[in-house]
Amino acid sequence: MPTITYQILPVSIYTKDGNLVGAGVAIPATNVSIQYQNKLEESRLLGAIQPNGLRIGGGIGANISMTFPVDFALNDTGSSYARFLLTSLTGDEPCYISVGDNLFGDGGGPDCYLNTASVTVQPFTPAMLTADFTCLHMPTGEKLTGSTSSLVNNNLTAYNFTSGLIHGHNAIVNGGSSDNLSDPSKQQITYKVSCARTPVYEIGQQFASKMFLDRVTKEMSIKSTNVGKLIDQYGTGEAFSINLMGDNKVSSLMTLSISSAAKITDQKLTISDGGILDGEVTLKEVIR
Image 1 (spheres, rainbow, N blue to C red):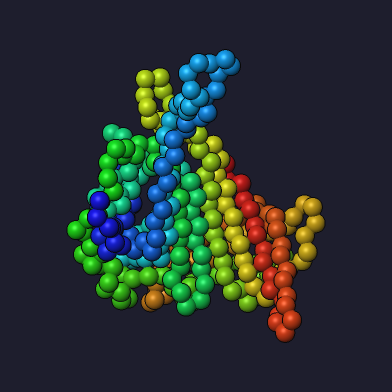
Image 2: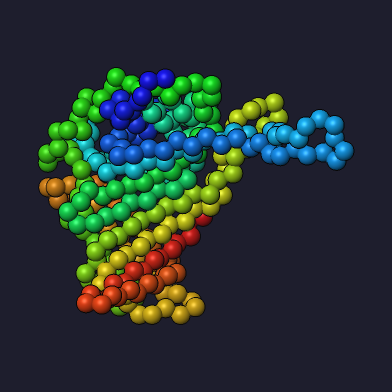
């Protein structure tokens, strides 16, 4: 098989009707990882004449993870929108994922499910999103091949006030004004959604038919030059959100929020010789 370079491996995420980022529209992924793992287990029998070996202990699974800057574009009404919507995938809605010419999650319908999604926001850099998916129906016995489709054909090179990347210096922070969280000089904010799921295997089927959504949690990590009040065993917290804006700062393209039900679960303070005190606070909220 010939060597595959990054130029011919566009990555796409879209739902059955193409309303997530547009059917076949590539996202600006900076890296992608595809991991296959079968459930072979060791087989050893007492007094067996046949040689020891491996046997099937469960279905095959594939995990796909990727990192890409959060970008936005215009819709039909002329309004800007973030092209990757977290709310579309943190519930029961599955999706397709294509890497090059290979399509993952095509089991008679989309069946790739989001496990975790994390957005990191820093000044003067694009907001970076890392997403991890489990694919119930993955191609086997096929080669991974590239595609002639290019990011240039998906308007990802024409960055201006109506489309482009969402930068951290344009974000607007709401909440966190009390002494509970941190001081005002917030240097980095990381927002993470975790979805715990259970696959459903049916008799006579080699692939799982669906995934049950067991629980959903949110985490918000805030780095600054100090923490707020030191927590006790009960934790403390407050509502906090960050609005990701385009370069024109006209409207919010994506809101990352955590409610007053969240609790501070971790505080970290570090300092080195000749430096200043760095603080990090992590809040966690149970959604389901």
